[in-house]
Length: 383
Image (cartoon, rainbow, N blue to C red; front, side):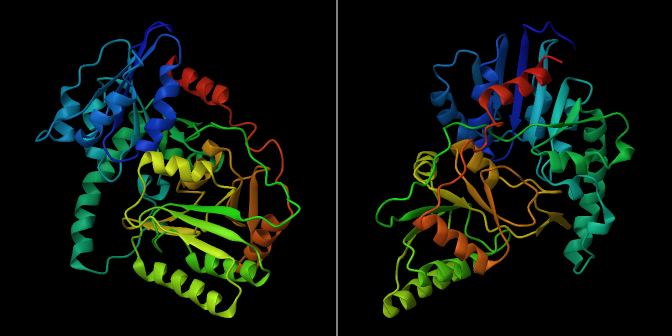
């Protein structure tokens, strides 16, 4: 299956909805000399991606047509000696991809490690008959996961912390564990420059408004502290409003502040979510990204630790758009662009400081360059 370094075809298999990785990876892969990319996606994405890459001759778009399942489609893909496959997302359907084994060399991107490694210490106990049915399905998934894990050329992780956690799995034998960031720096980092008069701080919270993975009470407490200091802040919730109860809490907060005459906070909603162009525009105009992440989240029957056993996309939004990011103190990511906060009160102090007079550090994300990420991809593809 080995091909000369100057001739490789990458089959990029995105069977789910992680189109942001397509945007941040596929064009960069295609910029490597001698590499062609076949991007396999769901029918709903094929037309728009063909238009997006119409001027890139070495990128083609494929995928199942309506009525054809992903397992059936994957079995029909024709590979040759120049081919290597990348599976960026498996979700909870590892059996869809087992037909790749022995047909093509492939790399597997891991997002949820406790799920993938079936760590019993992090598996929730059964509580319903539905959980018993899940256990039956899980038994089938475990076999498929094990086959994919041990057959891959390497397991890919978004960060060093995730890779270190993956290396703890000694049962995987000689499988390599490699770091492949979800994005690189697209734009130059920006600074908040203090004006003679106070300015409005533009804060963006990416992701769907839901309590599943984010602690919005932290945001409310932080905004209360900043508003009490007369800070002027526009905050954009850049994702679909899933939980309207959370939205109402913020609306009530603003109403109360208006009545007390201390309303320097403006809220911006996107009830139905944002398309790619809208998301890019909102993130590009941000001064700082706020990620009020919870330390743990449940994925299926498994508890995952954000930043350690589960990848989070928000830090990579910050990297891609060259923005500083506010993260909880426990998060392992370290960079001059990262400002950690310990609780809602501390978050309010940080927001106040940024809104009035703080310049952010220079050289944010300086090591996350496009050249560095392209080099990582080139080493993978041409190995």
